[in-house]
Length: 286
Ligand code: NDP
Image (tube, rainbow, N blue to C red):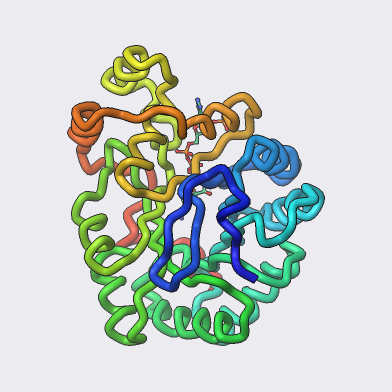
């Protein structure tokens, strides 16, 4: 079962394993369980064909329900979930995957990500090996990582001989991650941007609002377009149907090279989320 990109309005990119992923998806971090069904339904109705959830988000059940109830064939929606930190390790990963699939109510996952490296636990290489086993059983299309720094990627590649298909990292104009993106490009790893709007913090930036006014677009559309033109896969979140639609309407205009450069110059290497080198939440329950 492989995602069929030709059925979607969203352009896709080809991953290093030959599978395809839509360049624009819908994220559901901090979408409460009670609102997830409606938000995912609104996204699918707007035309999104990729949904990004995680065990941590506590809404896999509602994501799966909305996908099933949409009536869309399974191979027209690209589904991503993530293994939580406390489940890292070979056997615990196999169990956690089964539990996620049970909640999602799906028998096949398009993309499974290791949520954070948690170097301190020293289990992400074994975790990735369990991902490889699940993929060889035909239960996952693509396997990747999230919040991995260059050193973590080098270790996975060196010890397993396989390059993750995707690294989903915090990325927005204030944290443009040029070195990591260059490393990804060199190794054929797709860059997926989480917090693409800086979790909302970038939307009032005067440079962004100025460009938005100039081209008669919204700040969110300008930033999402910047991601797409950089080559990122991008997964903005909203619970508001009008914003869900607005964030999808990004395929009928382009930023000029100059506008792209102006936005890229906003990079101050400033995170809104945790530093992946020291993030160990969940480890206490492992
Ligand atoms: P985003 O950068 O997508 O920003 C979401 C915020 O922006 C919300 O507060 C939303 O509010 C607001 N917003 C969205 N669209 C608009 C708009 N058009 N106009 C005004 N405000 C808007 O942050 P996220 O952290 O949600 O990142 C996106 C996705 O990335 C997540 O949902 C999740 O799937 C993934 N992620 C992954 C992480 C990881 O560790 N791998 C970590 C964090 C996120 P409202 O909902 O009220 O519209």
